[in-house]
Amino acid sequence: MKRKHWQPGGGDAANGHLRGVDEWERISWEEALDLIAGEILRVIDTYGNEGILLPGGVPQRLGDYDIGRMMYIKGGCLEQTGAVSSGAWTEMAKLIGLPEETNDRIDLRSSEVIVLWGSNPAWSRAGLPTYDYLQCKEAGTKFVCVDPFYTPTAKVLTDDYIPIRPGTDSAAFLAMAYVLLTQDDPEANPLIDWDFLDRCCIGFDAEHLPEGADPKMNYKDYVLGTYDGVPKTPEWAAEICGSPAEDLERLALMLGGAERAAVITAPALARTGSGAQLCQNLMAFGAMAGLIGKPGCCCASDCGHSWMQGGYETLLKGGMNHANPRNSTLGNMERIP
Image (cartoon, rainbow, N blue to C red; front, side, top):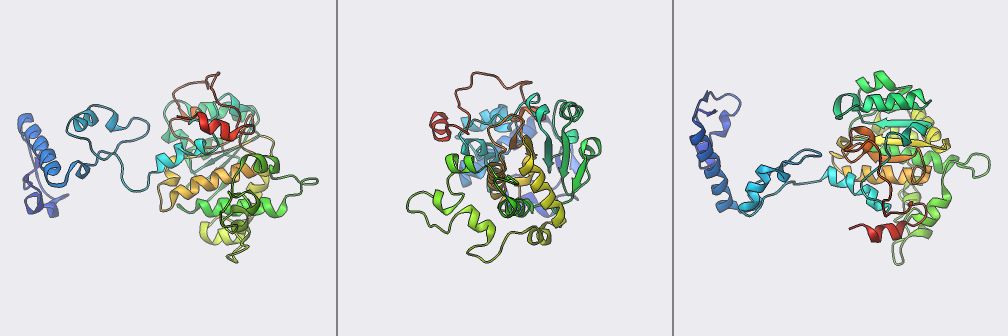
């Protein structure tokens, strides 16, 4: 089928103003293939190969299969444009010296609390992630869902639900980091993994910045508002997120105080303006709260590379040539291709 008033050649011939209202007419396969091939060649001749955009989903991108092979024969095409949320997520693990894999479904059964942040695996993930999460729940794991909607996943799993406005997640993580910084007491109320921050992290505070870096450009002082005069308090975030300040404080204390906790997000959270900053805020909070490199702990996206949410393997294979990031971050990073 093709639009009745569409003609090849682009510009006015396409009658783009009739899209959505034009009638359709049946054409033969031969004519359809000729039209498609002709338009692809026209665009390449006119605008170059970068004039063709061939996006695909996660994890099976169209560009990896027959359509992509066809385009590569003609010199290639663009597979993505603008901010790349998938890349932002999949590169997060490499920031701490690990490949893309995250915790498997058996490991997370030892978690005290799992936060599903903008993640609705009951509807959006392949396989049986809800079953796997129910095994965690049966083992005693507490579930918190942070989402603009009270999702089907929340109905099945959640013990606690926190609403949030779409696209404001970074503000929430900054506020939770503020709670940890202002309420941590290493003796009476330990909330922050200071040892991990000291040995394995760069840029958390001025003392851990690379040589020559502006001492003001550190995460801790930004959260506290040391230089911009804006402390990232739960009350500050509540105005942005719509999430009750007391809920953000309670969640921060819950995660900081747990021995084994996990924050698992959906990739869609990063598909917003400055979405890559969300990924980094998640990892920064995870480093503070001790969610990295320990059993039952993680902070990651639920993309296909995350085995808990319908990934490719039931269990994470052993023998990976990467040490625990708590011990040898820089060494791990040097081994990643």
